Length: 331
Image 1 (cartoon, rainbow, N blue to C red):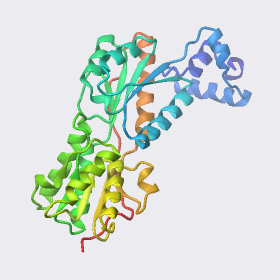
Image 2 (tube, one colour; image 1 turned 120 degrees about the horizontal axis):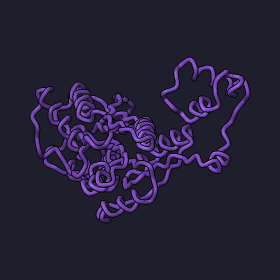
Image 3 (cartoon, rainbow, N blue to C red; image 1 turned 90 degrees about the horizontal axis):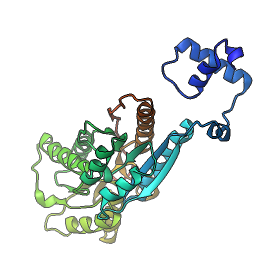
């Protein structure tokens, strides 16, 4: 390949291993040589030659299987493209998360990926900072100068959804909160509350029910909201799992969705389109977020290996309101 491209073997090696300091013209010449010679890297040979792979650890404890599934697809795609190893470790909440994180960080990984809710765990973050290893939080909003992050603006997204429901003519809009230990929950609640104010609607604490981002908590929250003396005509749940549970409770109580009750969710996970009516929801690009987090983390890990300061950026991706069949004007 070096002969084909007219460069040194070292330059070819730098291009193949993703060195960003290679000039664009030189990189293009090497890439043309790679294509012409149909080169495919031999992973076993790289290992024997002492080229170690980047090893990324994923520490998770998410109650939503739909969220985790989307998250893993993005992680695996990025790891495959970069020929990196992805090591997955579960950490149940209340299981001394900081100790679990510390053991995982000491296992030889080059960086740690933290999806919600562990992205907001103080003990986990303290363990990361203590080691100095690169880490990226996904789904949080709080800034942490020592750790990178990837998220959407959950406040703006909830504001958009609340405005949409109000524009349909609803005046009593219920809300199911998420896990109180996650910054995303508070951002979505604030967006809902301020969305009511912008629509000239009065905030009623009686129309807000606690949730934990689980289907079961959604059932309990929906029952609480729909059994009150003046139930809402619309319910906005902080994720799709709880919105799906709300649809189930409504149907059990003889309410048609959306004719009698509008139900909207958040995330646009698989459950949003596997129930009927399909959910109107906020699309959070979970797969793209985890992919971007992996790319950011692998870049930081390579920088650390080279003795450079890792990138600790906070990347904010776009969200979108996806309207389907679970919303309508009130009767």
